[in-house]
Image 1 (cartoon, rainbow, N blue to C red):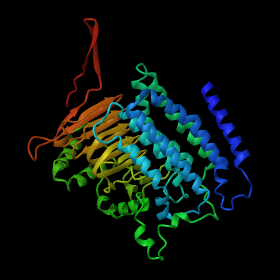
Image 2 (image 1 turned 30 degrees about the horizontal axis):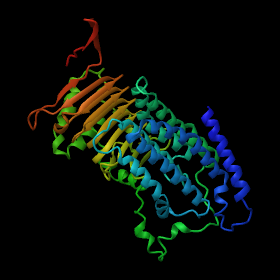
Image 3 (image 1 turned 180 degrees about the vertical axis):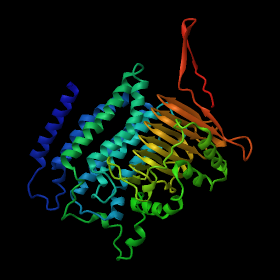
Image 4 (image 1 turned 90 degrees about the vertical axis):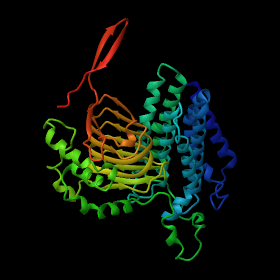
Length: 476
């Protein structure tokens, strides 16, 4: 409390000195000298002093990669302050130039995410938390209700929800090991909630306010005649969501005749020789499984309105690439032909709040997270880090390539389809039930083998400690 009080007093003194020495009404016609005196900019300085200082102090005690990613996070907040200052002096740019204007912030965020690539370090959860949390700074790109983003306040909250999954892992792992890591995780959360969220709520609830009479400095890279902007439209790293949905609707007719999620998997796998046997598996599972098994999702009753999918009350549907680093798929309902085909190993995929839909990821990505989804199908090729399934109900995940780790947490009813290249994957389950893993047979046309992962265990106290063994499951 004393340190926080001292920081706030120092910030207040700095503001008073700035007003007394630097504020001269009408002294700068362009508003450049007066920009730092803006209350929003001064409040941003308070935000950094109050929250980032505590966060950095904990990182210095830890050192290593944690300190490195913390420095990058400090740089990102500093860059956003510079952009907010420029916004006060600049007219609102068009879509093409907005990407160029936000390029410095995007580069810093890419630098943070680059630390999570390659072999996992001992501080992977720290790096992942910091990297994912920086997506919250993209609220500055909000330009209206048709821009494909949530309102700035909601965007900050949603972005932290993605990062909090890894932040909670830090709190659990270091709860009794090292208080510095716990302090780091708590300080990072407070930086965004309530820190950044309350700041945006107070000054930019409807997005950044551009100067109506400022300079058009952002338009400088395209001073040529009107023909020049045309080839520059696809230049920003974030493709417009409309193009993704348009490609989705163009393929809708091919998947409509089929019924149920299993049929959709048949259509997808029919184009992939490596999963040619999947067609037989789904047919067998329809006949041999009992009616009370929930491993196979039957959607025959609700598939009739698929041609006009409903929308989630939680928010508008999304399928977009944010800041060039993360694909966000949210609130998709009744869409069986979602496709991400323009991805690379540096990008991650976050699927949230989807129901009765199928997403196909064509290409290698860094990480896949499926959160709070129901009757959802995921088909992916390769993943560098992990595929994580959290808080889901009745989902099917098919790996057509390789995946080092698959994590299933707090999920009921999950079917995992592994390819021959992914048989060595490490599968971790916690607080989950009805988890079945299907592996390919030995022959080219061999039947797939189904294995139920244990969800019950026997604990026997023997020789001074408990011995735990799983309860065997029958394959009836």
